[in-house]
Length: 342
Figure 1 (cartoon, rainbow, N blue to C red):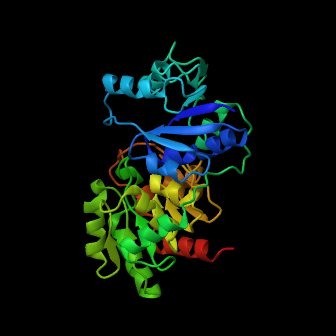
Figure 2 (figure 1 turned 90 degrees about the vertical axis):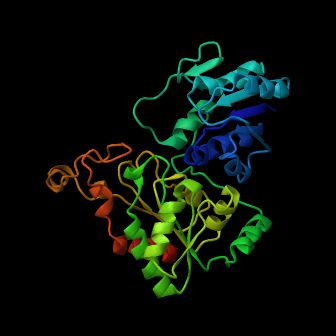
């Protein structure tokens, strides 16, 4: 049995998409430990394949060489094998410093000497599940999708803290770390929240990080009585647990979209500048709204949307029509279909 260390990616969505790789490794008998930054560590605690999660004490974007040496010293002699999921040099340093015999990752930023097996990086934007699974050289089925679960007491604690009942609320996650070209408009979220609240009599919980609290406040102010702002007021674990027990979830292309998919929750996911061909919500109960699916060739050009997907953080033209032209009525229909579909 391999004692295996996995160096986790730094973004929630990428962390979720790495779950099929971990399931493959555990399936062949590896004893898995994941080293993750604090803001993604809770994702790995919801993965059954992971035996241990080590939180890395590093600030975002900093090298922290002395801290990396200290962490590496605690890992020395514990592992036979390491998979380095991020492509950066600094992510490969800890396994090298820890003298783990076999260290595997993509070419990334070079990393000669740091990795013992450097796999050529694929071109373009491949599907992320296959991208990570390829590191292990193990076959992954086309149907493979991330799957996560919490113990019932974790979900019960989050429900009690939020004073809600499982299946008796909706969740919106209106933010996206990448930028506004991923964000469905706040006024659309507010309109949808009002409609759902009026028709079902259920609250809409607005989740996200502290950076997204102002956006959630804007949505709540435009949808009086319908919304409760929890952005920045819950831990990531509690936010994930609330998503897992929701009646339905509406998101942009974001980390919390992938969390909802991994819990198999009915969801509607709105895409704008990015592509569901690269980072789809891998969930049979997900419904994707992306104008590129409907507009092709001359029709897209005629609508002025042949730029999709641009993968930019902000709209180069300033209009964000790839998002604004997805109406609340359409998202509501997609969500209701996801909820009622068998």
